[in-house]
Image (tube, rainbow, N blue to C red; front, side, top):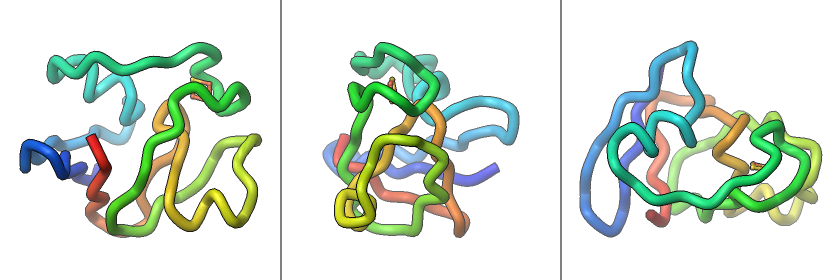
Length: 85
Ligand code: FES
């Protein structure tokens, strides 16, 4: 598991090993857009403020991966990500 901090509210949410960031944040009450939920459409792209994502999508370019991630499939390499949400 790892934690996600929401930069706009300062909330810190734990993402369990068996759930996606998208699912977990929805459960926490966030209204998030998605479509494929398999890392291929680009709808759930979210800006990463800090932390190192573990990218598992199939759509982002290396350039885009420097500051964003697809939260339906990608996770964190370290213990924490700060997202622009
Ligand atoms: Fe399609 Fe995340 S919902 S890439």
